[in-house]
Image (cartoon, rainbow, N blue to C red; front, top):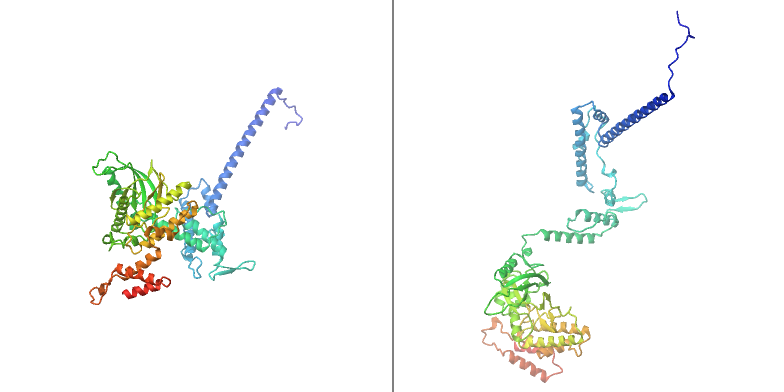
Length: 543
């Protein structure tokens, strides 16, 4: 018997309104917490899956392998090995592609490494649709201006020209492309120590001439910097302290002649001058050392002073020491230093103001210091003088040139405002290593040049009154004009007995004085017509 649908239903127990509201709130809060928890879990799983897929796709890994590698429950060594092998194949093919591009360049005949690429051999059925692909350098992104330039240059075929979309013909000799390519080579191929700067953001174009000049200079500096065994680098160069010079300077310290070295004073074309303080406790019965000294170290390189031999080769005082030796040899260098010492001693004996000689050791010459408190006296060119000082300096120089020629029997041969020091209102003559005696074959030419330098310097100042001209200054020093002295030298050379005619019976030698008297008599007889031609005739008759 079925129950009646209208049967009486038991009524639920009465519940308070506060209890009902509390239960509903609790259910709602629990539902929200569960919902947020499941949402965060889904997001994290989605990000992990997307990262895995993106990493695998970016490395050209097959989809099947990607799914299997992202599934934590599947652990297959074969799948992992296959993924690593695919990465290795891609790197190897990229290496072959770069090497192929480097070898071919812009050549009309090219080679290919396709048959050696692993991507061509990936024919397995399992990965037939996932073959390895090598990235084409032409399809990659241009990271800077240099990539665009290189792509533009490489796009020109082997025939040497191409036609643009606008119908313009561009050849491989295009100035714009070559200028940008030279800039690219400057930034990438020059040595690290060469400061090229950063030209990626600048459309800089270097001509071939500029690039070749920079490249030549960079290679020269690179070789010079790392050259060790070259003799020219072992010699005295810019700072003049090589192994031999360092040993000499150290010996001066051991002998208690020098107390301290204070660095370089000046660097010239023939030598480097250093400042030093002497040892005042050093006792020598012959001399007393000055408090400060100038150490002159002669250079053995002739890069800046290549005509050094013409001043010493014909000097009879050092002819035997200098002959049969190279100009850069240590023997020639020592003779050059010894010559300056001898000239300074001769000037000092004649009463001229010049540095005193303290010591000579090979090519290192120790002189008294012209200056005070480690400050060298300025050169006449750099000194600040008033009008009275300029007049005084001019008179002192002229008197010194006369005293040097007539008493010391020397000609400076390089006298100018650069080789005269101004100290305590006095002029000091320096750098006399090239000074020669009047019997030198070019002595009067050197003296004439000295007179020209002094006259030009003081004439530009326009301060000294009654400045002598070059010829007048030469005549006041020598007593004769420059033309007469040149004629005199020609007669002197002509009257020398030739070695092959020394023992001839018909040889008539009148001597220099006799020929000079004949020449003066000839001038007196015919003053208006006397010229160089008559002197030549007289010379020929004397022969």
